[in-house]
Length: 218
Image (cartoon, rainbow, N blue to C red; front, side, top):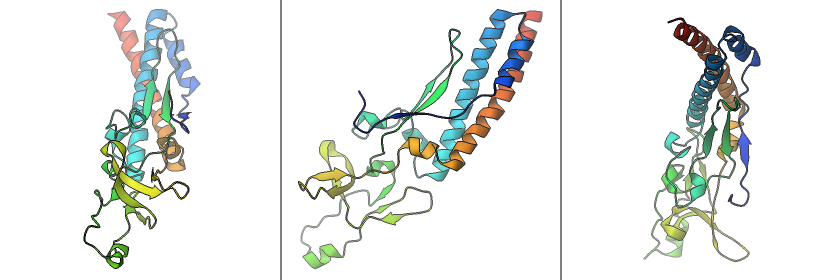
């Protein structure tokens, strides 16, 4: 079940049908190898595209690759498998990269927020408390922003992160930033993803044609 506000985005990394046609034309006389070659070429290309996309994300945004898929849970299952591959099968050549659209919570374990632990106010005067530097958030590599009306605190389940008070009920509210879906749609990342998809398919189609033809000629 998806959390409120969550959605899925299918990455626009379309494969050139002309490249796939090259493979089917070259292997039309060996249909079994043709089908296997198509599946292999598409799946290898999807995996390469995913790797390039994740690299582009981590180069621009202050997020670890391990946190994009299969990383730490941070107390919430919504943080796992943010990027999921749907690979082609012999029954269906379709493949895709699905990206979860829920906004990332600003937990300190992600490395986007400093300080990493709440600052103690015990024994401090109100004047001293007011002088405590506000937490800083770094979403983009090399850039950071102060959050004056937020603070580092420990929430439910012991999760340490950036919180603010809800003015209507005074409850702690975890602050959030962009979703991975927002990140992959950024122009620079989208272009890198598409470029990787094109180059990978060209390379993998050529390899599969050569490999399949050599296989049946032995």
